[in-house]
Structures are given as structure tokens and as C-alpha cells.
Length: 433
Image (cartoon, rainbow, N blue to C red; front, side, top):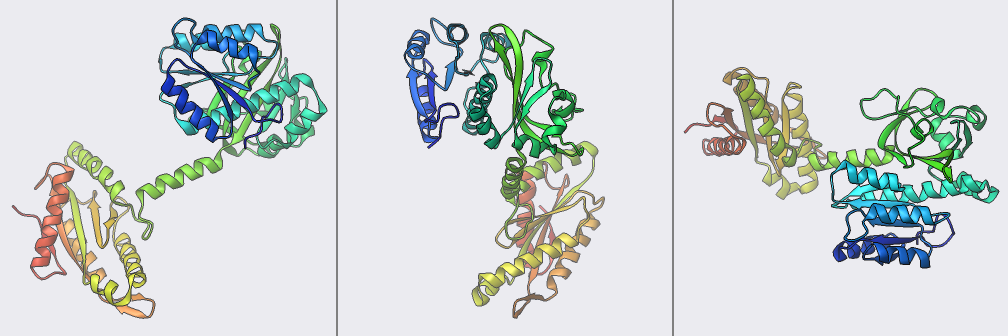
């Protein structure tokens, strides 16, 4: 069960949306994450709910009939001494609505259609930021102990930008000791950059622009450590106000290196064969049209070699798939080692491979590569206690000589490969009408 960051109980989230389907989907998602959920179908119903019950977060639709989201948000923020954070949800794409929401006091917004992983993390950061904001205002030792135990980096600054509090997680991420940052200006410690930037993003812009009331957020920005190395972060900076007076701000951030590495691994696995580590069919289907486009633009030829192993099935049948897998890995290594860096080899599946030659200038160059591949695969392969002998039949298609698109090129290479098999295997064959 998710525990409230503020009260020690399960966080309670109010969903305000006139679309019943959206409310139902949000409820299912939030309850699945361990939150308690209440609903309101319009602005007046939301104000009634807020008057009756305390909430840790309000998820509020911008466009609603009658009283719209920004008006509801402004009323809640102005009528409560300690209002909950408000996350706006919108299908609109106009800056005016978003600006109205921020001016009304919303801490952030998210677009429809909802991306659930983004919403999950956004809620977590908003709740964490809200907790840090209240704890800093209360200056309570109990709350400071909670901040010290937080996994997110949390830092409090005063109205002049000097760091008044920083938790151990933040110090560990940045590589500082507490005494090295306490009392320093936050801009000297928090060096932020968006992709391609120069680490000049202001971590607390509301200190200079007093009219800013909203949380400043940088998704997957970069931050410098004390030693000059950098790491990716999700970063939120929220102004703290007492009435209309700016008292300071709270910075909440998280190292997302592991998340990015996991995403990169997923992308890699989606585009590579797990056995041979070669690019797979999914990658090849995208790469071939790109290669044809480049060849067309620069007026050069492009050659595709479709490779089907000879005598591979008997190896699987006689020695088992374990030995067959070793053979396929050895085939991949031999094919990879026979190419220039500008060319590529992919495994389409089973015992089928393709070689894409982007740097050859002549048809003879393609046939030489094909012959070299055949000779390489004719060499015996050691697979455990077995010595395996295979060969390869290779079909060659050439752009623009015999095709003008990716689908035709692959089909022609496949047809030429089958012709090579008909003529006795262990040979290459150019496609011909």
C-alpha cells in the first residue's frame, strides 16, 4: 500500500473530470498504485468535495462546462490555508489555457491521452515536492528526519537563494558534504542543463521573477556533480510563499540513470537478436528503406545479400538445439568479421541472415563479399564436442538495377537465394528477371 507522504495514511486523490470514462480509467490506475480515490464530475462538485474532505492531490481537468479547471483551481488555492497540490489534465494544446492554469496555482499539467508511466512518476514527484514544501515551512525536526530518509534529493532555499537545508540523498547524488553547500547560493551548486544545453538553466527562476507561482520542472535534464561529471535527473523546483510573500523554495530531484539504462536496454532488445546480438528483423525492416533512400539521394548502388544456411537442419535434428545455437553464434561472428563498418549483417530468424552493403561501388564487390561469406561458412565449426559442416546459399538483389523499394528488394534477394539452392547450394546467385 502506498503511504501518504504527509499524514502517514494512504494518500487521497480527488479526480475532477466531466468525462465519466476518464474518471473510471484514472480511478482504476490510481487504486492499482495504492491510492485512495474520490471523484467529482464538475467544478461545483469538486468545491463541495474539497470543503468536506482533505486531499493530498487534486487531478483537475482544464476544460469543463460551467466552472472550468483554472477557475476551480484558483478558488481552492485562495480559499484554503494549506491547499493540496493541483495537477491539471488537458487535451488542449494552447498556451493560454496552460498559462491560466499555472497562474491559478496549478503545480504542473499533463496532456491527454494520458501516458500512465509519466502520470505515475509525476504524481510521485508532486506529492514528494508538496511534502518537502510543508516540512520546510513547519521547520519541524520530525519532518526533517523524514526528509533525511527520503530517496529523492531534496533541498530547501531561502528567499535570497541560499541553501538552508539539503538531505543526504541530494548530497550523495551531487558529491558534496553538508558543510560544503549549507549557506551557498543554490545556483552555485545546482548546475542544470537540458539536452544540448550549457548547464545554465536556472534552478529557482521564481527568485528573480517574483510573479512566478508554479513549480518549475525539467524532465530528464542533466546535472553536474561536484567533480564535474554529470547524470540525468528529473527535477522539480517549487516556490514557497506565505501569503503573497516569497519565502524561498524547495528543490526535489531524482537520478534517473537506471531508468534511462533500462529504457535503452529495452530498445536494444527490441532491435537485436538475443542469441547472436545481431540486429534483428525489426531493425532490418526499418533500416532497409532508409538505406534505399540514401542510395537514391547520392546516386549509388545498394546490394542486399540474402543468406540461408545449408545443412543446418540436420545439425539441430542430430545434435540438438544447444549445438545449433552455438553454430548460429559462430555464423554471426564470421559474417560480422567479414564486413566493413559501413555494412551490416542482420539475423532475420532461424538460419536466415541478410547482409546490407552500403559502401560497395560495383556489383563485383557484392559478389566478392558473397563468395567470401560462403568460403568462411564452409570452414568447420566447433560446437562443444561436435565438428559441424555447413554452407550457405546466397541470393543478391541490387538497387536500382532490379528493384526500387525495400519490399521488392528483399523478395528478389529471397528468390535469388532459392535459385542458388536449386543449382546445387553453397553458391551465390544474382537476381535476374
